[in-house]
Each structure stands twice: as structure tokens, then as C-alpha cells.
Image 1 (cartoon, one colour):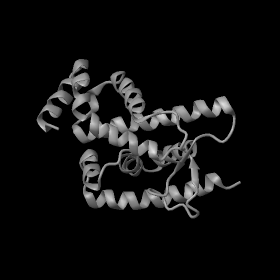
Image 2: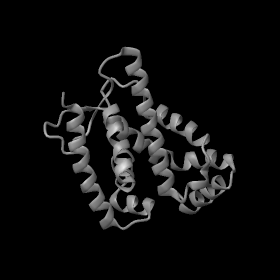
Image 3: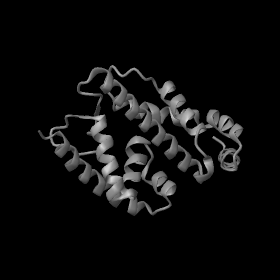
Length: 188
């Protein structure tokens, strides 16, 4: 992908040109598809959303938001990733409301050291992440970018405008906190 073209389009979108977002999507579609596949890989096997549908739902949410806060490519991917996570959470809530049971499941063994490596309710994950936002917003953003967005340590540092060593520290601390919090949420 042409970094200059991406920067120009993000700059235009930030200035209020909604057409720029439409032009940006094809340039970064493969990257967004990778993020969507990663997020869906952590869902139940019979999940009804496909990566393309998840990208389109996130795109609709992005199109409805102002691009004024987007700084660069990594920040855009982080925002799209957050939108995808929210689509999945909303989908889980809808499914839970319809069935009034269990909810959707997500395996977090890649991101969190859950003692029994069992599956964790996606709504529980969202609840835990929202609590982490209240306690330490930066650590929660690191989790969003690393786990949900699939960004590397370096890309996360760039998106948050912090050092790689800070990302490593926050990632370690957040994983430990989330592990404990998810165990607490699953306890009867």
C-alpha cells in the first residue's frame, strides 16, 4: 500500500471529505480483512458473520463518525479494529437477547493466560475491557490494538505515540489483569 496515498486520504477524511474514506478502503482492504479474520478466529465456530461482513459493518460505523481524530494509518487501523470489536459485541448482545442463554464465546488463550484455557464469553471480555478502560485507558488501548487489531508491538507504539518498551510493559500488565478479571467474572 502507498503510504503517501493513505496519508493524503486520511488527511482529506479528517478535513471532512467523506469520499476520501471510500477511496481509502480499497487501499487497506487486505489489512482490514486480516484484522477481521483474526477477530473472527476468536469467535465460536458457528459464528454467522464473515470477515467481509465485519469489515462492511465497521466501515458503516466509520463513515458515520468524524475522521477528525485519526492521525495516521496505524491509528486508522486501530479505529477500524475497535469498530469491528464493537460490531462483534453488539452481535453477541443481539444473539444473547434472542436466545436468553450463554452468549457467544471467544478463546483468549492467545492474549490472556486463563488458567484452564477455557472459552470466555465475549460479553465478559467486553465488560472486563471496559473496566480496564476505567482503570488504565492506555493499557486497554494496547489490548485493543494488539489482541483485537492484530498490531505488532511497534505498530501499537506508533498508533499510541508511546515507546515499544511501554507497550510491552502495558501489554504484560493488562494481560495479567484481564486474566484475573475474566476468572473473577466466570466464578459462580
